[in-house]
Length: 351
Image (cartoon, rainbow, N blue to C red; front, top):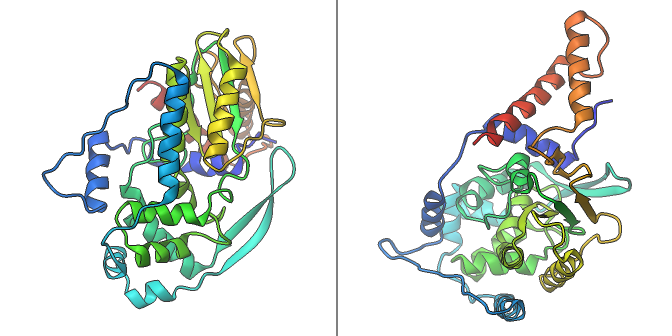
């Protein structure tokens, strides 16, 4: 059997392979964000990242920002009528969409099960409208690479190539630990009034959180966690450490193996908990040195971004078997998908 990427990465890898090369510049994303959020044309919003004389002062600064953000904004002046117009539906249809989900269990690659909440077709169609007509135009933090346009498992792995140490942390129950209240606060923050924000939150959340299975959840999880990524990125930068996050997978790497790893993990844990999440520190904490095989989102990064050696060997064997008419463990169509992934790794690694 061919080793499979985790289900969410496998789906993302296929999407990445089919849309590789579709990139937008940072200025385009900013312009989209400003126009969609009701920004005034011809004005500029200058922001800066302050310098800190110590990490404790930096941590205190971001903690105040998190506390202020938790209070929630009052909301903007964009209402349900405008929301319906932008989504291309009637307001009655928007308000009347049925919130129906089908739940089932999916086996995890590492053992155990994951609960998937699949929305009904009318709800899924509305969520896709929200994703493509609203959420796609907004900007997440640059460290968030999962399910982001112009990013892939390759761009998530690239910052960690040829590092002396690679640290992998995993956020526990990431989607279902993102509460509806934070989603509602985000929608109000970007300009929607209380009514419109409540409508969006009703459609995009289930049982008080982001449902794992809704098309809007991956994008929203990145958007509402801009502050989480900003705080952790600032911590990493202060210690000359690279950081990226692919959904619930957080990766850190350093060119100096002697960095205070335990201290870094402790501070990340504090920030994560302060933002309402927790880490799988017992089972999913991984620290890989140069002598180890360093894996980031399923790809080896010791010398360059590549598929694991065992996978490459099996792909060559499958190609030989299919060429010579022997039985193979993959169909030609499945092999084509792996070839697309392999091609994507080569092309994106050379950029």
